[in-house]
Amino acid sequence: MSANPYGDIPACLLIAICNDVIEDKRTNNKSLIGLFSNINVLSLPAAHPRLYLVLSLSNITGEVPLRVVLRNPQGGEAQFDNRVRADNSEVVLDMVMQLDNLALPVLGRYTFEVWSGDEFLAARSFNVSMVQAKQQGVAPGFPQSGEVGSA
Image 1 (spheres, rainbow, N blue to C red):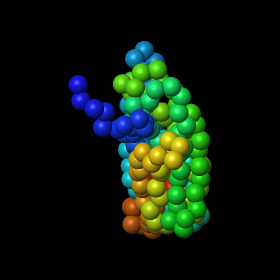
Image 2 (cartoon, one colour):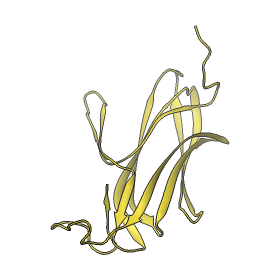
Image 3 (cartoon, helix red, strand yellow):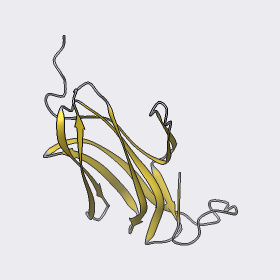
């Protein structure tokens, strides 16, 4: 039997950003739809109508604090606090966070960081880029000024 490579801190096995999550009620399996790492905006400030942040966590015994921090390119941040619980450290917990109307005040790299107490677990970044409507070959239904699209 090998030693646990994570020690006694939770392990973040997956961190994904996507447009939608479909959960099978029978099996609890999740399908991540439209994974992305870039958001195109037509103007600033913008707000992304909805995105999902999906985490898979393991190496948890009992209840532990979990904090997700979203940092924007100017150093601003939003923080989401939660607690997760498992009775067996080998269990993999899937956590799905739905974020509606996510404010995107500036262009550049935004980063989600996952923490448990003072322990950094993982990070995932995405870029916010400005596009011109004609560059996209705008089709009906493309987000209008101030709205965003994921790529």
